[in-house]
Each structure stands twice: as structure tokens, then as C-alpha cells.
Length: 295
Image (cartoon, rainbow, N blue to C red; front, side, top):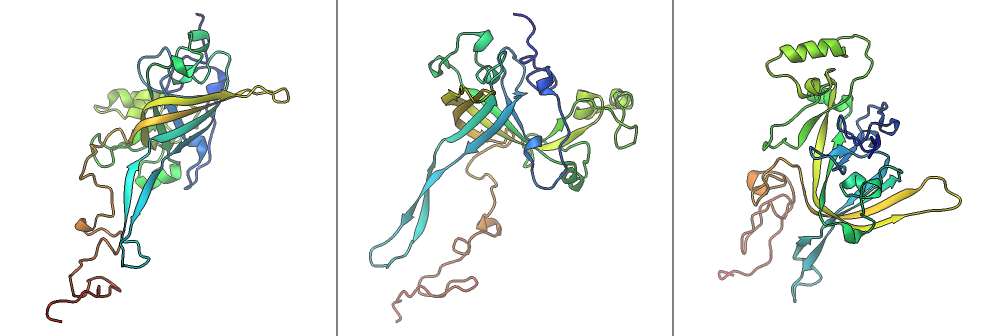
């Protein structure tokens, strides 16, 4: 097969054609989609996940049922809400169909010019999806890592935040925009070179919150071929085995917040000490109305 620029992973993206060229994006405190990266295993590459191109949308969704507990004789009152097990996470892709790289090739399957996959029935193995919510320079300035990015230590509480490097661009020589030659020299002389500098030789990067969607299976695929529309779009739906930050150790005592045993704020109900027949401690609490033996 001749060289395929729409499926030739390099510098973190899935292709080398003009469709994968980077542009600028606004710096705001509000997250913007121009900076969000969705990475999947492009077919033919065995090293890492790469950013998908011409992706119009990615819509992950989670849900679970919560059942109310009520008791006879206590009126119309919810005693407690009990969460059920979480439903598997789902997600939807919408992507422009490329002649040389379709949605299935962009998620690791041997389809199109690369193989025989034409149906969901031919998908024998799952794939991973990595979502990078890339910060703006404004947000990185608050972390003290503007134009560089922050990486938490693997296994640490902030281990799901990593530095994302960007490719070489033309700079003006200002100290805040190091030239490629200066960055290359600094990287080679430093005993612990910065990952972004080692990756791009220009020292440019942002922080990114990483979310991993692990062991995904396609559950639906569709494409629309219309006489009055020029561009052909592919849509795929996936179901996800697990969602995590790729760094933490998940378990019973995972620090998730709102834990009253640690003095954290959450719900008055869970943070209140109940005493049978007496007052309940906590702001605004009232007695429970039980009759004690002394009464």
C-alpha cells in the first residue's frame, strides 16, 4: 500500500495531510471544544493512541437509577435514596468520511483500504479512547505553568493531569516564546529535560485533564448518503467498559469528596449525629419524636 497521509501517525495525530494541521484557539476560562483532543488507536500503529482528525463531535454519557426507600406509617416521606449500579457509559462519534481513512480505521480496525471490516460483526477486539481536556493559557497561568503545562505524578491525587505538547510554530524570539534552536540547546543540556521541550524542541505545552474510556465496543454505526448534501458523515456509538483517570488506584476508600467522616461538607443529613429520643446535632435539626422509657 502506498503512503497514506490520512493514516500516518506522527506527533500525536493520526495523519500528516493538511486535514491534520493545527490552528489557533481562544484563551478563555470556559473550556472550548477547539482544544479538546480525542485519541484512539489508528489501525497499523502499535505505539500509542493518536488524535483523531475531522471529528465533528464526541458525546459521552453516563446514567444510573436511584431508588427511593419509604416506610409504611411514616407518611409521604423519602427515608433514603439508594443508588443502583451505574449503567455502562456510552459515547457517540460523528466524523467526516475520508476516502483513505474511515471511522473504523481511525479506531483501530482493518477497514476501507486497509482490510475487510464492513460490519459490526467483524469487530473482534475492543479499543480505548483517551479524552484530553486541554487548558487555556489563562488557566495554566493560575497554576504557574503558562506556555508549559503541568504534569501530576503517576499514582498521585493529581496524576490525571498531564502536560500536552504542541508542534513547532513560528515564534518572535521573545523569552516567553523560546525559539526551536534555544529550546533544543536547553533540552540537551538539562539533566531532566521538560517533556514538551524534548517532544517538540520549542518548549510549548498546556496542561490537560485526562479521561480514559477503556475497552470500548461499537454498538451502532451509520452513514448518510444524500443527493442534496456534499459531505458524507459517519456516526458511531460505543459502549464503555470502564472510565478512569489512568493514574489513580480505585477502591473503597478513594478520595472522592463530600466525606463527613473527614470533616468535609456535603449533606446535612449525612453529617448529622442522630440520638434516639434526643435532639439531633446540626444546624436547624429537630427532635425525631421518639418516646423514651422515662417519658
